[in-house]
Image (cartoon, rainbow, N blue to C red):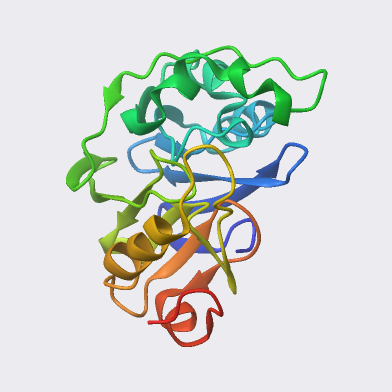
Length: 220
């Protein structure tokens, strides 16, 4: 997705790749409300978020975390300190509360402070944020607490590392399961409308129709 790829009058979506793994964070801005929300908080994204908020004169009200791996939560504490409410699934509670337990997989000089999760998600629920509906669906398999955030009004879903353009998330990490991920993709992602744009934690955007037809790991 381009850095400013979706504009609907006063609504803007930007992708902010950050950190050693070029993890995609996404910031959704409603200029009319002067509010914004962020999906995922990779290490190093904080100054980018500050810059975008200043550019558009917005306050960050929510941080939605797709899952608890270090490359998605590295700057969550700094983002929370801007005043954002933090939403996450308890399947990854230990990583959220004790992020340095992942130190063996992290760059040696990286230190992650835990953010306080203010809203534990059940999965299979609908939130109302920035005046728009956000459907939460559980998609475990890459991580136990991986969820997707589907914005029906904007025809897009933020899927974390469950699925990528032409690929799927790793299942050889702690808590991973190919069978579980395959089921998540088939029942929670491929059941979305085919024109929905899938915005992943790494790499370019894709669509439900594209992955159902051509994903070599899980076809619809």
